[in-house]
Image (cartoon, rainbow, N blue to C red; front, top):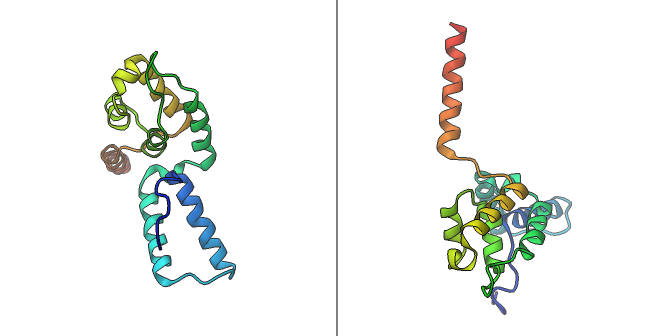
Length: 152
């Protein structure tokens, strides 16, 4: 297979999950036979997405976010958000300014702190925040411990 035009199609994690589900459904319906390697690869990709917060976001959520971000204005004379930056916001769901600085090139120059805070609010409004792995694990263990203490 040859890549004819690299970068013509940017796909969010939610869109990739939906595509994998559609392919799997079509294969189950007997529309075509997938090679074993394709099945294994799609299972691994799905497992990866299931380990992230991608499973909690729908394509409609991502499209709604894109519509809002397309109209988000930078500081006067600066470049607006690029498609790759919007895609990374949809996939990574930033919750802090530090994460925004990692996603957006020259973020402070192009947007300034106030606009970046506004971008964070937009992301949090349109998408669920990613779970914090350490806090989720610790919280689960504490709850179990507390329940055990109550029973005694």
